[in-house]
Image (cartoon, rainbow, N blue to C red):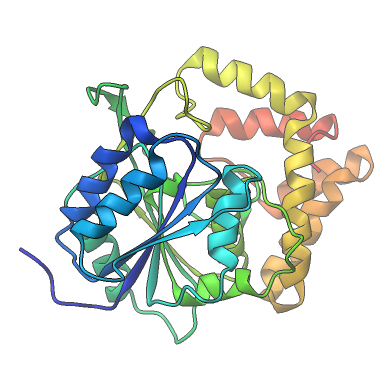
Length: 313
């Protein structure tokens, strides 16, 4: 049963040569119980039938329900950032959407219900994310993403994202922050920077422990689920080799743009974070004073070790 209309939502989809799985995703969008949506697709230069499939889907929908844009052709992060920064896309809520997943019928309904019912002052940033059910290339269930239990705040956001971008739904106020960013800014990933900015401003961060999408795992995934011991070890080795430090440098460029508007407590935490590049004793002190952590205790310890070797900032 469809819920009462609580505002319009723009679904921001990035595509690139996605014809293999795109139809399933489009049909899951069409099946949403929440009907007040518009699908905005930014295609990053597909050479297969992706754009043709989007146009065919648009003809099945009512007029102006689907809009196809030409993306920047600079990779998935830049493609989603292009949609985030586009001031002509105006709605009450926004949802990121990958080209190869399958949404549960109530995905938008649940997200908007939680966002709209959460008490928040006018113009407060709001972000929703959820766990995912993992499926293989054939759509068969193979597991679930980890269930996080610790608080979702700036101290956590500086070290990790809390949910996949393909689960995220957020309000107009959060998008407006990105519209004010300079056109040459770059990001590591759209989900992580959304969590960082929202939490930096003490916005509302909602985590749904119930999966609302089927997250497809296949060889063409740009970002996988990163589960399993060997996967985590391999990833940690890359992070220790300097990958995470380079990511933080990119994130800090965005944070510097809003630093003057941050609440005082988060300004202090951000300063402690920057001090993780100082001398050995100051790095140890700042790590604890800043209260930085990941959702896994073992990973928090591993990142503390990285900090000892000046591998975070």
